[in-house]
Length: 419
Image (cartoon, one colour):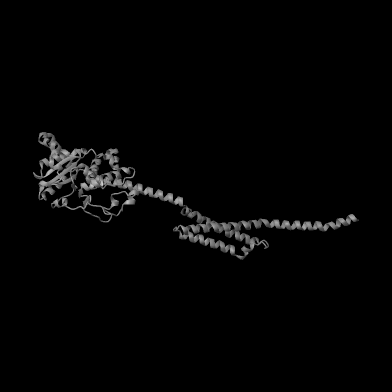
């Protein structure tokens, strides 16, 4: 009986244990929902932080992405509004009753916002990736510069071919003049000693330099200058041509002398051994390409103007005339002009972008870009007066040589070949 009573008295304890276990079981049944809620709120907060970081970065870098910034802000506000709803806020209260429908609604709307926000981030990722943008920009700039360099190179060469190719009639003229020289060799022997004429190095006379392979054009320049000169006996003309045309030039002026008092010296650029094609990167490129070999000599003639002090060491001044010039008045006054220590005197001609520095120099090179103005006005090539003493003092040839040889991979100069 006592044992039965004890057994009966123990029953309330077992009942309490059962009830407690049941309550814990009920609470454990709620924990998956609570875990999901905590996860959803964590995702929402993280998404807000990430979206705000993107928005702040967009403002800081001043990227032109107003639309993306507006979208990010709108979705942050939408997620904040969703979380601010009373029924959603109540889900964070451990003592509140969890309504399954509210959780499902919260989950669905949050996932929709997350999907849209992630898509926005994916679409704008490239805009925020500095390294990707910088590399893409570098690739674009490199490609454009490469195309520009090649286009200028081939464009200038095409211009040279079109503008300076020897017409068939002139080529035949040179051939006939050479034939005359071979047929009447004795008649032209005296020209072998022309270099000994003292006037050619007399600094008190007025000296002209003409660099050309065109016989008739050179003749027009010389004859027009002499015709308009008051004292033609004081004018000395130095015509520098290539080896092929040197004797044609000599025969022409022997057969068609402009007068009997002016002095005309005709030499080949090959006589000036100090000048090498290695000084000019573009000449080396033409050297390597057989089809442009003949053009090389015309380019060398153009570059020789930068070596006039070496070509004429005994002279103090020289007037350079291009072979498309027709002189219409006496040029003696130019030699008496006060150049105030300047190296070079020329006519300034600029219109729009033509004859600006950018037309002649490669401003993609950092040194050129740093030191020169691409819009600065250049000068006319047709008639240039050089103070050779000032040139030597300033060491202009050395400076020109330096610029040409220092940048073989990226040429500094775009020679105006069409002139």
